[in-house]
Image 1 (cartoon, rainbow, N blue to C red):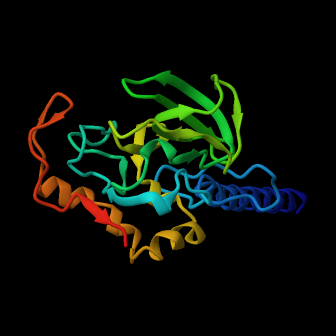
Image 2 (tube, helix red, strand yellow):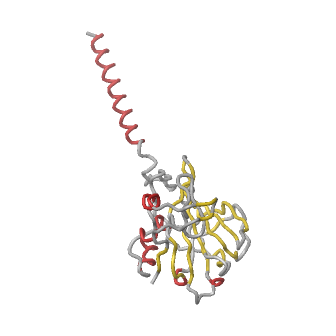
Image 3 (cartoon, rainbow, N blue to C red):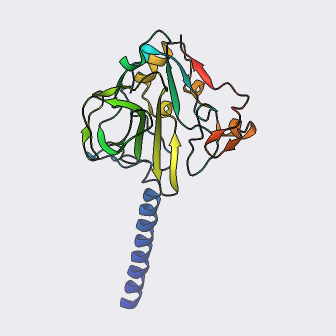
Length: 242
């Protein structure tokens, strides 16, 4: 009798442990996609999850006439570890009547200067987000207000400079650092709805108005010679603001 009791207890214990294990395993499978509401530091999203957290524009939108689409054939090849021969950033072209050197440039997020260097025109600054450190914002052709160095902190909405001038357009790129490599993300896919409303007020109906899908670009490829485009494809490359 005593042996039978011990045997029943043993099997009950094993069943309880197994139930606990599978319950825990099931919860952990989605841990990279679910924020912890009890933590002050949100979990980083998985590689297929794009948070919409940018609430501050990097540029004075009222001075901009048109914006190139993500995966356009404008400029030069600027692609990531997963795609090639396409411009995976956005060019902002001002109105002709605007003094291009007057256009203010702001930090779109609170973060840290991750890299900074002089380009052929102005300074390129790369900012790593504090909220989501696997997202890096790259702003091109800036005339800095004050010197910045790697490690300096910047705050969302703070002016960091002005556009360098009419010799080139202003452009912005966003990189999501994943375990499989660097993945370019459209600036418009990480905006909050509140920020995107500013573009809707200029006649834009959808974020997709600024994006050429991978499937559409693959079906309408661009020829590349190194970083130089040999063609710009047949898909419209620009979205014009009203």
